[in-house]
Image (cartoon, rainbow, N blue to C red; front, side, top):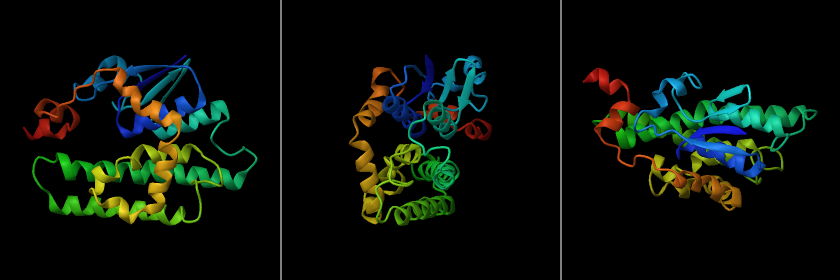
Length: 228
């Protein structure tokens, strides 16, 4: 039985999507990052970076959502091209890392400076809004004339992207979808899958702290402790 350490944020939710799609048996373990549960010694032994998600699968411990997606896809043989298809495998690896090193980090920083910075930082806000938009435009162009990110099949790249593009209005504003119709089409296609609804609903089986109060800010944005 896979133990899946998660909360309802984008990165754990895309792993929840894979688990629901694949039918792998798993035990969800809630990690409330607004109360600091990610820094408990037992959890740091699983993920020294103090982030979610992480999984424990027998002797295997895997953290970072994109690494987990790749691990689970290799384990099950689902949602990735055949090992013999070098062209498609190369494309999948490239786009998966694009999400890991581009979409995720830039979206995260764009959200921070748009919603959570203690005071406005115009340069940082504009920088990360620009990069979030630029990365989405790369995806928008790639999806022109195609249904899925890699070849003609739904894959872990679509799952990885879905975790973040659900948040586009929160990242870039309520009117942002007008700029990315192809990305919106992909979002709708994945969100319509029954497994996606189950992945999103997983968090509702647990109690997480809802308030982003000063205590939660100090826990989640550790540099604020130093500033204080």
